[in-house]
Length: 72
Image 1 (cartoon, rainbow, N blue to C red):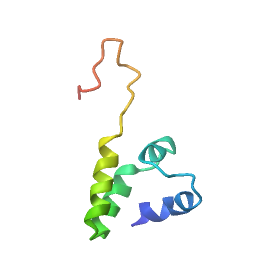
Image 2 (spheres, rainbow, N blue to C red):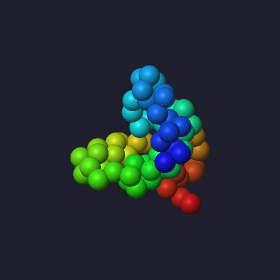
Image 3 (tube, rainbow, N blue to C red):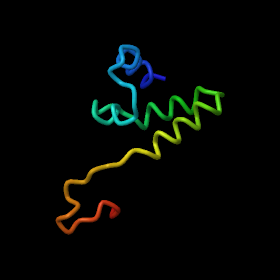
Image 4 (spheres, helix red, strand yellow):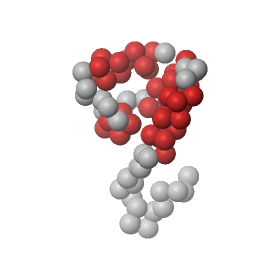
């Protein structure tokens, strides 16, 4: 729950309104997602979370220099 409380003020003020904003603000999006999953009974919220996470893309600076972002 601590992760959700940490981002609530920024979300309420409109500074954070999309999943990518969590990444741009360098917030712990995994902890926030875990808090939402653990505390909600709303299937619509869970579906919205899933759909938002599916849209996230990660840019790997190494890609294009012989590195693959899918390698571990």
